[in-house]
Length: 71
Image (cartoon, rainbow, N blue to C red; front, side, top):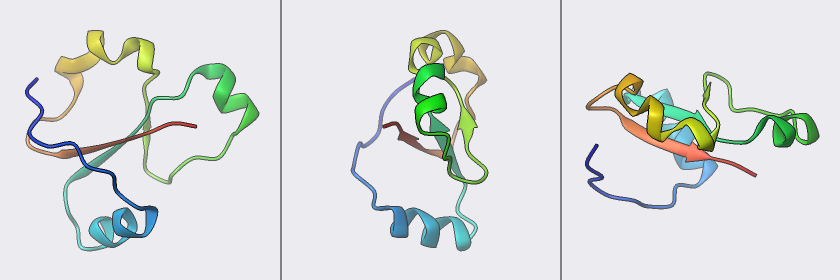
């Protein structure tokens, strides 16, 4: 999977882009333990622990922007 561009995105900018209907996959890469400590999540996000991202790369949508977050 080629990375086209990596930038930091503020929460408000993500909300705005999603409200415009942009095809954005929000990926929560926190560990199971981190999710217990901080159980908050971005609505509509997909949980995929960082330790599994490489092996699950083919399951991620092509052509969508992917926003990754953790704590």
